[in-house]
Image 1 (cartoon, rainbow, N blue to C red):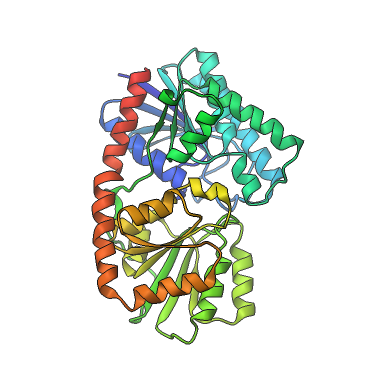
Image 2 (image 1 turned 90 degrees about the horizontal axis):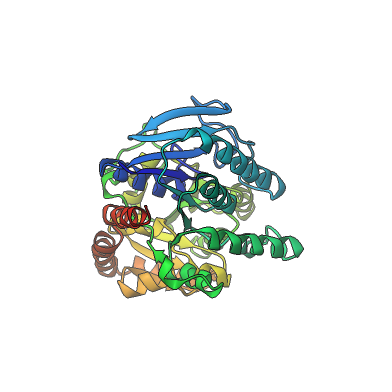
Length: 404
């Protein structure tokens, strides 16, 4: 039996995309006869508050779906601010390196970003244990923090870029989520043959509908445009509010925002100041309740700010809408995500940070139910064939075993 040591900053019961991808891959690997040990934090994302039932112990262990999970003490902080989050990342890196000594049976180390200190930990553990190291790149850090103006480009960023290059060249193989990420790494001189793209996808097994115990929102025969995910600086959700204001006379069009993040309080303040009633903001929901809100939606909104870096990303939420046969509006810089919408004819692509264009796309889908139905069927077919978690997990495991 092969033994995989996997390092990740996020893991269920946290519900963000990195946690979902890692868990959904790992449980499938275990069913294939591979032992998986995950080193992660005690769940606290995004508020920096421990989830019920957890304590911030130095080390705690549990078994989640057959996956051996080792949780380490961390510096608790909300998902905002640069200094405190950097301390959080560094503490995890040091704890992961220390705790890895307790994991005796290891054939391969896999580390995933964000954040890239997790990748540094993987590179160092690989040297300590003299085992191959596979690096999974989910975003281009530190580029992503400069893209949202979290940190200005300065000497520190130049140092981080040098560390980023060292981390890449410490890896036996690199897995990226998009071809654009792959091109970025190859530009640094890393061998193209050693970089493989394994996109995000959808776990069809968790798309069954479970209604929340409390009625949080009533559709009321309205046309619902939903955004479900992180309320981050990168998503520029204020554009949704401005678009809602443009459509406030269209009383049966309603916007539903579900999630949390660094920009949530700002959005709530802007909504109050604008006095718009066609927007509902709900808190982050448990993962098993998300399909209920996806099913309720008529159209899914995929939002990112207008920055060239975001040409390279594919927001994972678009696959969930596609799996529920929902048309999507992709309001992001033209690149990987808009390419999927256009290639499979499963949605409309509009320029980012442009309320007028977003309004135009919304009204087009609102007035054309046949187009919505066609795009919904196209999206389902595409995600089932090419972005199915079963096949993607198998593809990644084959690569890991090849390295072993």
